[in-house]
Length: 258
Image 1 (cartoon, rainbow, N blue to C red):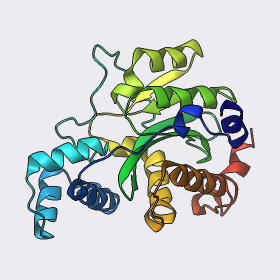
Image 2 (image 1 turned 90 degrees about the horizontal axis):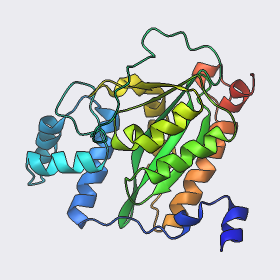
Image 3 (image 1 turned 60 degrees about the horizontal axis):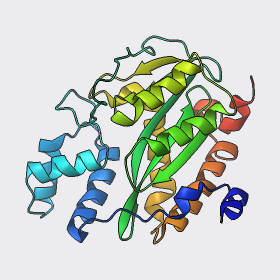
Image 4 (image 1 turned 90 degrees about the vertical axis):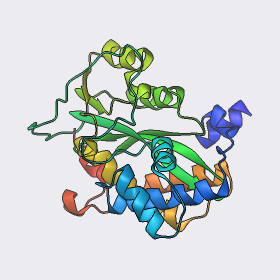
């Protein structure tokens, strides 16, 4: 099994993942919240709650707050924090404001998003090169712990390393294990301000492309289907998808310039 996973380029632990489960109503609410967040990223818990009530769902703000936390959703205005830092974590400033990002491996960024399935959901972490939009590594998990984020970081660092690494203040990225790997490579650490999703805009744009061009068009029934669909899309995104902001070239051409 280990050799087969190596040949497929699949993390062995991912082979055994089962999608996390929720009630059918919660899965339906999560699907709507996820889609609406991409359209209306400034909608926090109160507005999202009233939006769902107006759509005929008998929900309250506590339920929606819990689901938004489960989805790892951050709105673009300051609010009660839903991205909890690791206990006793070290604080790092946001280093990208006003920075001229003009070359590959100057800044990498990461984030976690929710991937819906027919009868459950998974979490996806990805690391992106800010300048070229190239996806350096990614991992799927059915839990929100730090291990799959560390695996993605280790894979990316096997290839190259950035000058600056940006993330939000979630516990996965503020954990001592994650931070120490960056510090061991002498990488400067940058973290978004709380409730400022636009501080990490490049990875947010990738989530939007991934979901509208792949996830929302599919109805993944198994973890393997989700893995294969996302794997194929990321290959397409890196090597074939034409980006207007890159002069209608794929990210790989810009990333390999250095």
